[in-house]
Image 1 (cartoon, rainbow, N blue to C red):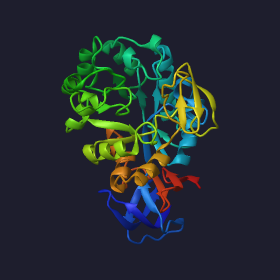
Image 2 (image 1 turned 30 degrees about the vertical axis):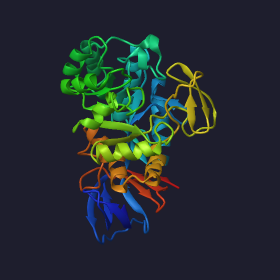
Image 3 (image 1 turned 60 degrees about the vertical axis):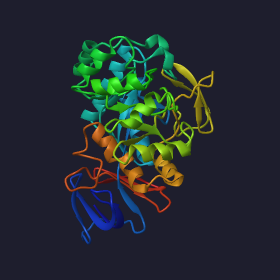
Length: 377
């Protein structure tokens, strides 16, 4: 396949006109003019690397914690419609046996890929979190951090867990962070840690935060909180939900400006209701009421999102975040975070031929996965 006449984001994420050829699922050539039999004219379009969602619980009626290959396959097939070509199915604070079943289902989808977006590992949100910042997680399933327990799970499920969340102030967290960060990203999440506590956690080995601003201590001028610690760091990278509801657009602009283009990661944090009609849905054993673009528990607690990376990229451009940073935050930045940046995340020869082709208004025109058409609007 040859994509012709597109404006591509090159390996430096500068935009230039070029053709791209794909062979055997990989990018084979990038040049001003490439001729061949199977061509696709994308004149007037932006050609971005395929989007990478490293924090997604579910969509289209399916959820990671269903613990089945069928559910993760359904997610994979739906996600390409939103420009996502790679993702990390994300678990909740559920019983450990359910987490294990979900990770094994994801491993099956990695070993025997279904149609659609590729599974690139698992994000484990919980169960090592604080009951005081529970969010939409279920408190009875919280567990004390145990590095040996996690390592056993990690090994039994094929070492595909890429991220695991923790509240660094809970008992046993320090030892967990120091041990587990040697072979898996450990992320601050659902935590009461203040500025000093978060800073200590970063020194122990945390260099990632889950859905910045949400379920953590906020930024105040005399109490900078965990958010202030992230802003004050030069290395910690932050997931950000960019639906415009979880975080106000003005705060999104500020956060992206402070963190810079290499430390921001766009995530959906979506649940099974994403892509479906309003109604009541399950998330981690709790009922979520979805109305419009808001997903809430009965007490008004925000419960994930019904958004997707395609919509959030368009949102951010509309909010005034620089396009280059937006695209990096949906592609190479998340790919680096899960150690997949040698294979995906940018348009470079030898990498997977995954492309999200955007119209001038940043709506999705078509999506290509491993050199084959996966979706066309």
